[in-house]
Image (tube, rainbow over all chains, first blue to last red; front, side):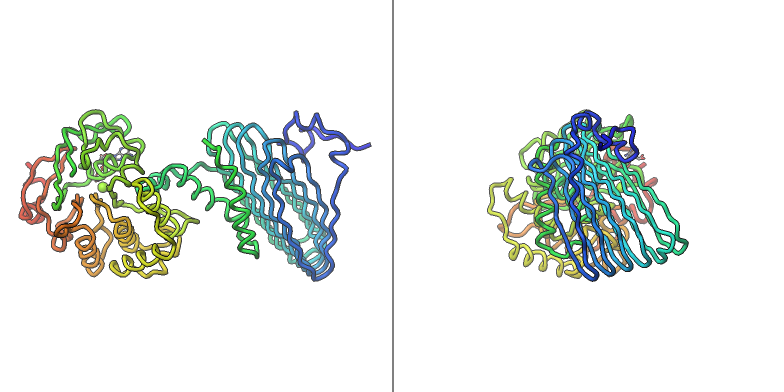
Length: 248
Length: 251
Ligand SMILES: Nc1ncnc2c1ncn2[C@@H]1O[C@H](COP(=O)(O)OP(=O)(O)O)[C@@H](O)[C@H]1O
Ligand SMILES: [Mg+2]
């Protein structure tokens, strides 16, 4: 029988307890298994808006020298969680760009477990969270570097932007490193809107909503900066910013 | 065009402007000089409507409207331009994108037609050339990685693009070398001098030193001290201040 998670489980600690209580095993049993052949590059954009709330889980097995790219937005009005388990073979790369954005009371979160199983694999994960109301945005990122996975290079970068008191963000990086020649970097910062910039923009004639939109766009753009398709990148940005319409 | 009457304003708990009265008519350039801490920047911010700068009494009329009743972006659309002493860096937002949106927001507020991308770039190129700022700088993020002088020239490029009726320029000359000072001075004249038959224009030039006034000749010079205008005169007053210091002249 599937173990039903609660917020006492490490990987679910920032999740929405009520939403978890209403889960059934079938919500948890669906894993998308994705295998990338050696040398293959595959990219996927995921928009988890109101047509795709809930839990989404994928397992990526990334072959030698292959490259997996996932860009995601979690903006649904209900509990939304994207979970990714990634295994990187020699010289493989995993690119993740995620944006949680929204108000209301929902929790939206990304949970990644990236295993650098062989030498010379690289991973870069950039997550931006923008919230208002009572909303919460989380990034739980675990990186495992296997014993002989030398020359691993793993980066995690999280930034949260709180538009209104009452909203929150959490970042929980976790590193388990069994090799010695490894670069792992992680950064996390949480801040508010830059009031000086807002006034500067207003002084040039931009109404507050327009200024806020430009600033939020700049803030989340990092998450999609590594996207190779400029048009898809714009459409992700527009999609995320559309949620901002109802922000205070 | 601008009529400030007995203006009192506080920042935090402290009263900084303490009964300031000043009138700027179309076609006039007024210089406001004064020692550090006199309240020059506070005056500029109060006119711009910066949050935290609270007017406790007095009035400001701008082009026949109650300026203090307007939001900062409405003041800009009404024709007020504030040149910042410390221009703000905005990572991730390009100058071109920022200014085009700002200009079109102003035009839409005034019920004017919006400018296309092509027409905007043409205008931006023309103003950048006027201030001798490389057009590539305008494609970069707002003021990020700009030198002090480049930031000030960028302020003037913005002023050229937005074409305001009244410019309040807060120490636009500080941080400029001699060549840049001349370029900026000529830029101010080109953009803000009243032209025959043109729309009314005025300038409030806040400065600490006389040197910018060699290029932008003021019609009036005022000394601001402890939140009040303590002395007014013609262009000569600036030279006198430079020679003898604020203490001697304003006493
Ligand atoms: N944000 C602020 N909070 C508190 N005091 C301030 C603030 N800004 C300015 N002041 C004070 O107001 C006075 C006037 O400052 P300012 O207007 O910047 O003068 P100036 O531009 O003439 O040098 C100074 O005493 C300064 O310390
Ligand atoms: Mg000042």
